[in-house]
Length: 480
Image (tube, rainbow, N blue to C red; front, side, top):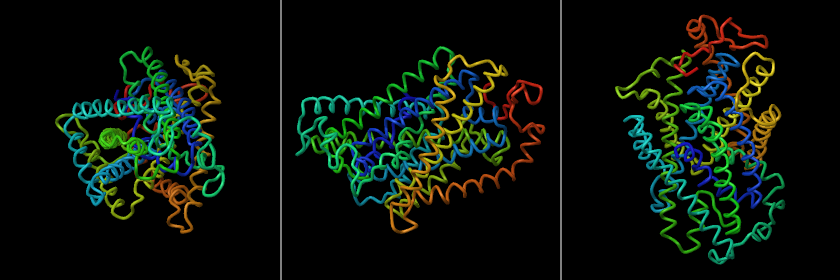
């Protein structure tokens, strides 16, 4: 439930609203395409997990196949991803609360929500697990209820407000199934894929959890395939029903499309209930972000790639220093919400860069693993990705396409340069991150060399172990 619930969050519950409005029913294609890429991703991660189960996940695999610098980049980008995701989730909570209290400042809601989740994380891993389990039940339950109601409404062609539901709305929508005339564009479904990627973000956590199973060889294939199937139903099924129940012009940014539908049906009590679930969903994702980043920062600290402060642990085994450091970044979410009403969309698009980087590392590691196993350097994984390496190459090409799409959509978004958010994120943000990370690597490189005895390259060459041993460097205490 925790794994499944972790992949269902604000990207679907809230982020889909603005994309339905700007793209039309063709958003279904966007979700389906990203869903296929997510399947390729999970099968690649499954192959890696059964090559070597490790709680270090992609950071550990990058260390094994590409060396310490690659692991440094991966760890910090994963932290960056979750840091921005947390800001997006906090911004979403602020928007949800305004459903009842329109005058409540979002920045104040952000601080209250952060205080609650920070307290849960600092208590113990048990407190985190309990919160996540019940939050997952709430999220999955809400989606299941919506799917059941939606199937009945669409199947019987009932009225949702003044509009009659039915599959015919897919092509009777303003502009048809794939609107191309102004204000739409034929490439609209491509340009919104960065936001759709954010909706699928955290699905890779399913693979991380699978890597820690006691009987991974039996459970990993079952877990990966089952979760992919369920996510496809939840995501694509929800979007299909949403576009069949109302014209996409009825969905507005900042208001969950699920709340819009139930409100138009006159079920205000259901709208209120869904709104509560949405707050729980955002808090759940924020909770996962704090949990993950605290441990990622400690892992980087153990590898001498982060400040020594990140090694601090509480008596109950919680890496409190890393959690608090991430929380400091989350506080910037309150500042962002105080400065702009578009804080949620800005955070989503910026976080998408981190998600894309993480996905790219998984594809790259799977390609390298298959190269080495094909040459007999390492034993082949017992759960190989079908269609490899082409599926991983397709995944990498898709990631490149999304980045280009972000730049194009950002440029077209506004006549004012500093309002071209996506363009700025790609053209200025990515180079700026590169410079920051390069400076950071230069500062910690000498410590890493000393810590590893100079063994900062990959474990394997095309002919065998690089350093005469098959042991994978494990500075962070990961399983080998």
